[in-house]
Amino acid sequence: MNGLLELPVALGVGAGLAVLLVVVGLHRLITGRLDLSRRLRGYADGPVPVREVEEAARRPQPRAGARRGFTAALARDLARADLKLTVSEFLMVQGLLCAAGLGVGLAAGNLVLAVGAAALGLFAPRFYVGRRQRARLKAFNGQLGDTLMLMANALRSGYSLLQAMDTVARNAPPPTSVEFARVIREVGLGLTPEQALQNLVRRIASEDLELMVTAINIQHEVGGNLAQILDTISETIRERVRIKGEISSLTAQQRLSGYIIAALPMVVAAGLFLINPSYLMPLFSFRTVFSIPLIALPTCAFILVVLGFFSIRRIVAIEV
Image 1 (cartoon, rainbow, N blue to C red):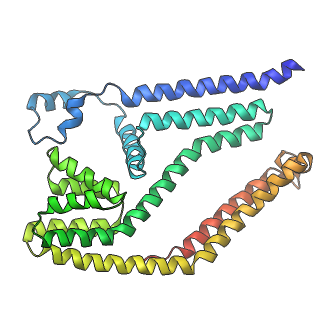
Image 2: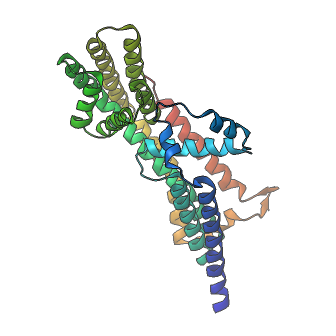
């Protein structure tokens, strides 16, 4: 009996160690050796030596594009969520949570629970990153109208564009102050204001911010009254925020209904499983009824619930 109890624990520990080894391997593959001079070279104005460019062109790089694309996208998402983690650290946390969930499920002797806990540990960090990213974007968009008014007033007072952005970095609330402070630091490291603002647009995926940066770039090329331009954009953004708030209030009941309808079957199933597991477990078997495996029923029900949830979200997502 003790041997049977120790077997799931041993399997869980072995699976956890295997996942940990995979994560450590990915960490070494992604990070490699850090060269501070190469990291700062993008902020420098000096040209890259021709010999180094030729050596980099001759150096073989098999299948590196996809890996760089994945790591760059994940690093961008972490920056947008304002998480002070590198890509390798995030992947390590994700792998450890997946291994922990798998080990707990195997220790409990339930394969379905092990797979579910492992999937939860795998996808929960990405869900958390996406949630923080959306919350930060919403806060930034809500502050952007006041930010533009502050910049316009600073420009009218005789400040330059960089001094106006520094005023925003010192007086605005986060996340606006954090992002504009980073713009000032990048300009201090050698980037032009246009490049630093483009980096800001990449970190904050906001259409209103992109409109502001485009207006600043056009004004830099052709001239004009930048303070007046920012006032006009600020008024437009304030009106859009007001309309979005009204739409959010009118569709709150429908969005809440979508969450309740999607969660209710899972909550009822979890309650039945806790009260009487033998009553629900036949649904997760491969025994056939009319040539249909019983496990297909909860699978199809889950797919339909997910489709219904996203259909409701799509209906109430009104663009302004």
